[in-house]
Length: 352
Ligand code: H2U
Ligand code: ZN
Image 1 (cartoon, rainbow, N blue to C red):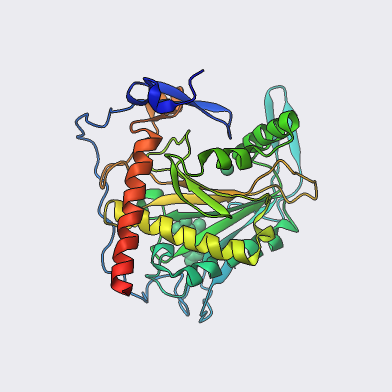
Image 2: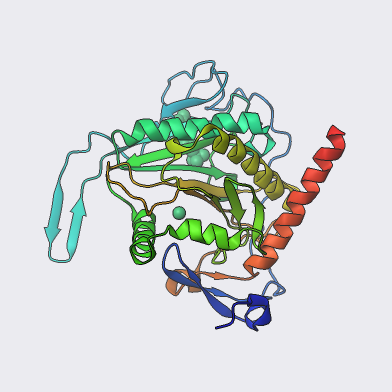
């Protein structure tokens, strides 16, 4: 087996890659991006977002859709989603009739505002400001984990990803069942740990550090375009020491993470010189009191754009057969790394 990817014909020809974290394969059709595109174009993101918007339901002091008034918060702010998809008092029940099965689900949905400023996205924050968001994710995970085993922290950024409002915010949905993605990652990490005695993602991180898909690493963190990325500029953020859940992160890990996140997000915004849409979220071990040494905390970033105004659609083949991407993970990593470097050098110049 050849251990040097660039010495194979794979990089320039259609091939499949294995996603070790989900156990699924995907198709990589390198150099397919030159095909003509006459489909839909994404609207350019809103310019000139004000620091306060009197019509925003997340700004401090404003009234939400259910008539409640937000406090005049000065840092972060959390409230229960007024249109929650999960309810804590959903009655416990189950149903089975041959192949038909259903079971009730209990949970809660929180909306988490990252800043009182309507215009201060994570990518525009200083590392110290981003740290308040890291602390918020952790504290909310700890609290919600006392009542529900699955705590899904996420952010939809930009209208292309369905965000309803530019005010910097994320969501947390906590529920009683381990959902599909959690189950897949539980199975792959567990079987790797049982076979080797090691953590799948820690081993993966060590293999990627300093390599062609590494976008930035330090003693505690790796930001990488995963070898098996499906979305064009997908990234994975992995702690380099064993950590199962967000609340376990120490002070230094949180500081370094805040810096890495801001660096990555500025690179994303720099790529097409516009606020970059994405869905991101943390995968952490279930909060069910069970020891899960195989589980490694990590964040996924799934941005939809292939070009400034062209999005990747996960449609026909992707829906019916398997995920497919047009540029290799290595090309995407080169472009993202250049964007990160050029934003950093501009910041250095303006500071100096
Ligand atoms: P998204 O932008 O990712 O959709 O998140 C915003 C959430 O805020 C959305 O789930 C909730 C919506 O239900 N929301 C409220 O809870 N109260 C409001 O007044 C408006 C929106
Ligand atoms: Zn994951």
